[in-house]
Image 1 (cartoon, rainbow over the protein chains, first blue to last red):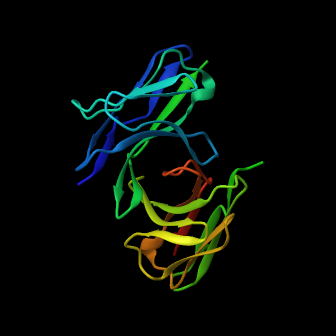
Image 2 (image 1 turned 180 degrees about the horizontal axis):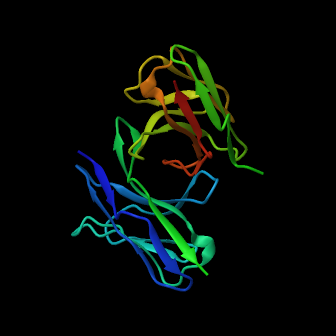
Image 3 (image 1 turned 135 degrees about the horizontal axis):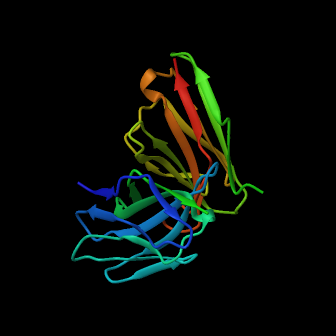
Length: 114
Length: 111
């Protein structure tokens, strides 16, 4: 079946540290890949996406590259800020029955300390 | 202004009751969704509406009935609540193929 596995959290970093949150997937077709972010007290919002192999999605200093050979879509940021503290969800989508359906990972909580 | 809002934020009720959760988006998006987050924290789609028309209807008991009075609203009505319905329910909206913005969630507890 289709599934997404994220690294277990929580992750705690100091400000300006390098961030990597691992995400791997299993899919029967050729999925699009996404990262969502949920800030405290808010709903999830789409952070970045990549629709085919070797694509790089980027937004707000975050990047993730679609690696088909390793079935991965790791999220990275070179220098995190306190305001990046949130829960990050990796997801894939596949077209089924003419509709796009998302499959989410469990989420990884990131805390950035000043 | 909140892009996607849900009410109530918390809902505690007895088994067998009927309850509704309301969702509104002020983004002008055409598509709205309901997702359920289970106890293992996985988010799973329940329904999707595009311009008030049902697009996705996953394997959800027919006790759950979505209603979209207009493009900006998608409400979820649940009949005869069961213990297993306890979860966090998220509304979402989008103008692309997948959800862009989610609401803050409604935590439903069935006693």
